[in-house]
Amino acid sequence: MISFKPKQITKSLLSVLPERANDVLTKRYGLGADGETSTLEAIGQSYGITRERVRQIENYGIQSIQRSEEYKKHYDLFIEMQSLIDKLGGGVIAEHVLLDELTNDPIIRNHLYFLLVVGDPFYRGKENGDYTHRWFTERKVADGVEKALKGVYATLNHDELVSENEILNRLRNNLVDVIKQDDDEILRRWLMISKQIGRNPLGDWGPVDSPNVRVKGIRDYAYLAVKRHGSPMHFREVADAIDNLFKHKAHVATTHNELIKDKRFVLVGRGLYALTEWGYTAGVVKDVLREILAQEGPLSREELIDKVRKERYVKDNTIIVNLQDTNIFKRLSNGTYTLAE
Image (cartoon, rainbow, N blue to C red; front, side):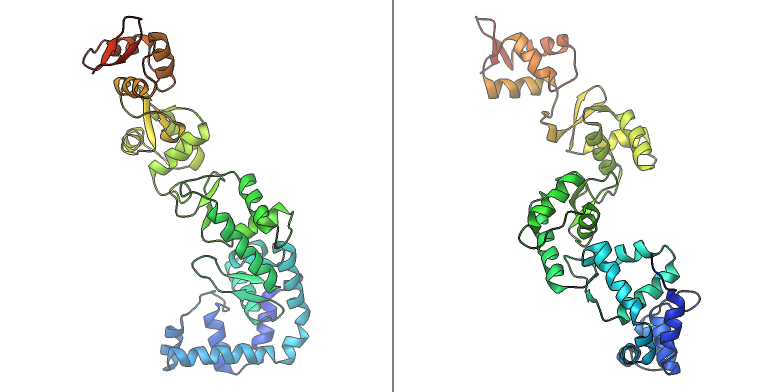
């Protein structure tokens, strides 16, 4: 994707510096053979100087390179990097995304990052609470994308999951007054600038601090597995689905225990669990009958069986037996049932 060899370019640029400035930049940016980076403190200790003095030497080194003939000699490669930011990111792209696109070699990655820092046809937006480090070629585009990402985040409920198509459409809608962008790949890369919006292992999007996106344990994996399935699942099926979907070993007993304790799930039959968000009522059959009658008033036995079967995977006779509890239910003269007073 790039026409130049980053290691050769950085070696050429560093050659214009005095020995100590060369060494400071090499250590700070991991430009040595091992690719190891060093902190300001560590470099300062090796030279017996303060971290602030190391920072001054670092800044001096970068500025010296930018003023050098070697920099002018290689300026075309910085224009090439500018073009890549425009091509891959539509003018703005998250730093980690850009580097991932260019190489999977961690050492080459260090050299490319150094060239980004040294280059002047593009700019760096520093990481903050809302956005990750990002590079852009036009401030107007960067500001517009960041504003649009905030708008998308404002449309998401905390535990909401939306498809990739939906999240891309929401981003497009928030870009209407800013900039038009129809390339889905660029829109995806823009989403990755946000630190508030994230994608879970199944490719759905939502607030990054939601357990439905930042999956941490069996409960979260189970939720995504049942949601993906779209209908109640036996806890053994849930354990198998976690293993198949996420390559995460889930013991059956552990999975069952986690489902029992999590309010996101409702037991709707023998070992069968549904999601609470699907509208299932918590509790045993008797509790379901009580809630239905409290909400709708007297109902016939057939109506009650039909409504309970939408909430629980049980036999008709189980429902009928529960209706016989005269402390809770009363059969009226017209054959319908109501709650006992």
